[in-house]
Length: 81
Image (cartoon, one colour):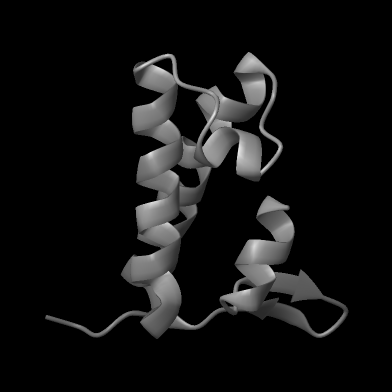
């Protein structure tokens, strides 16, 4: 379910390479933050259940990994300040 969400929001890789839509990063970031905050609150019934993040590894890593990926892509390809 997380991969499908990311694909719907323009972040995926296929035989043509990496695809991303910087405009969608806000929505992706919000989901990742929800995963992290729910895990920290020991609440696995909300976003975690909706995205089938049932193990500690899933919930501990998915949010953080996604935030790291977004930060790297924004650094490399985002608008220069």
